[in-house]
Length: 105
Image (tube, rainbow, N blue to C red; front, top):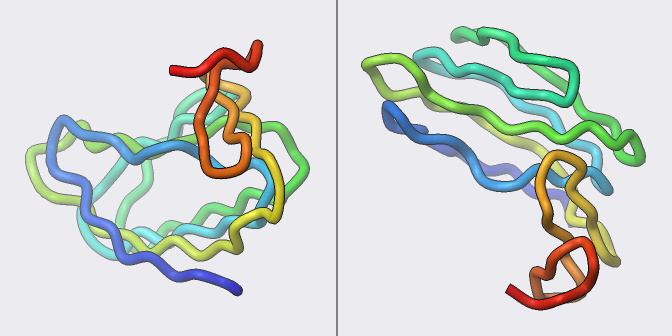
């Protein structure tokens, strides 16, 4: 079942983990954020959009380096199985999070 999430990032904070095994789409509604991807960083402002196709291992998250709040919509569909995160030592196995080697946190 698809999901839509309205999220606010306060200054000096960042979003959680990316989901490389689901299609994701984000729209910045207010403020600004820095999009961090495996290939670098991009400043995003209100009206900017980014898409992340499932199956492409591109670790990504948003951080707020500004003085004001950033609000965005994220659209996605949770994967049915495990998920691996390319930019950090994290793997989701069922309902648990583990290290890449399978050991628990």
